[in-house]
Amino acid sequence: MDHPAKCKSDPSEERAEKAEARLKLLLSASPVVLYACEPGGDYHVTFMCANMLRLFGHQPSDFIQRPRFWQDHIHPEDLPRVLAAVPALIETGRREWEYRFLDGSGTYRWVHVEGTLVRDAAGAPLEIIGCLMDVTDRKRYEQALREASEYHRRLIETSLDPLVIMDLDGQLTDVNRAAEEMSGLPRQHLIGSDIFRFFVETEQARVAFQHVLSAGSVRDVELEVRHADGHVTPILCNASLYRDSLGRPVGVFAAGRDVTARKQLEELMKDTQRELEILVEQRTAELRAANQALCREIDQRKRVEKERAEAVRLATAGRIAAQVAHEINNPLAGIRNYLELVSAAIPLGHPDGKFVPKIDKEIDRIAEIVRRVFQLYRPAAQQACEVPIPDVVHEVVAMLGPLAGAHDVGVEVHTPRRLVVRTHEDSLRQVLYNLLANAIEASFRGGKVQVAAQAAEGRLAITVRDEGCGIQPEHRDRIFEPFFSTKTSQGASGLGLGLPISKGVVEALHGALDCQSEPGRGTVFTIYLPISAA
Image 1 (cartoon, helix red, strand yellow):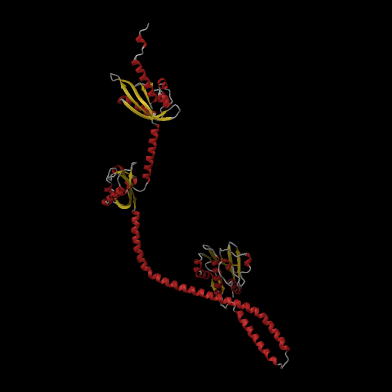
Image 2 (cartoon, one colour):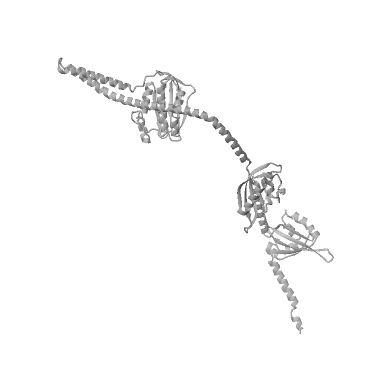
């Protein structure tokens, strides 16, 4: 029969087994992979923790059975650096690496590896033990932080204005390149310096700084910065207090704008203002003289307008009278014929015969009145002369300048430098004035009117072209009729006598007045005159 003691398990062995099981559990759940390898040669791996499979997807046995397995999974760009640092571990006893390691899925992950040299009792290298952990997320955060820092640095350096950061005592903690250029000192010399020493007005700068600390910011403070070579730059400074995540003040951010050009411009403006004051005094007398000349010109234009209005009024009255005379002449001739019959039928010595001579006399008087009235419509007798057409055109355009300005209409003139025609100047001026005034009034605001003159085939052609609404086809044949006007339908007023009178004047000069119009595209009136008119 067996001894009773042999049937019972050893408590120390049970505790050891439990401790070993617990250790294996902790190691398998740990985010850190433990390893051991030889301290020389090819650094053969002698132990790899089982959690390598869970964390990186590799069997631990692959590291032990395949000597180059670990090296083959280090990123080719990192491998030379890693291998070069291994001998230092033997010398110093400890080493850390960070490199990219290829996991079981074929993805490179950043790992942090530590190694510690273990020596035997005699001090000889015995084994290297260490750990390996995944730091990919940390690397990503570091990269993002680095990129953000570089981005912010580029923003600061891109600024053309000096940008500085100070602590709460006014000591510089960071500056950009523009600040270096304005101060004439390199960045390393500026960092840690007292900001106030760079200003000409030190006390003014301190007051502004204290205002930032108390109020949180300052705007548009004018200061002067002294360069290392002694020259001074005026700046416009803005500064604000910045705080940490808990809202506590940690420093001051300030920006300065070089306002040298503005200061120079202000001085230039002052000089210019003084010069202008002198110039104004000198020009006052000239302006007075010009004003007097302008008043005379205005008076002259008023007289011309008055004369034109009077001419239109007289021409209107003449045309009306001519029409009335025409209507009277026909029945008057009939009356005279009947009088002759009556006179022949009255016997000599008849008491009523004495009225015949009186009636005949009255008929003659009426005929004379009709003749005189009819003459009112004829153009006044003028002496033909050599007329410089360009001068006449420009004078009429000048007289109508105020009308064109009131309607916001531009007038373009196209005439040869020299074009002389023998005609009646006043009559031509009257017709051209009427046509151009009509064109301006018919134009839309912002439009233009063109006046052109040329000689061709033995006659003069003067065209007046507008860009108005044009004349409807049903009205085109009636525009030269007395008292017919399209202005009423366009919201303007007119008697309908301008064109009939102009046509009569042109025809009296042995010429012709032509009209071409297209609704929506404007109207063209052309005056045709013989080169030599009697």
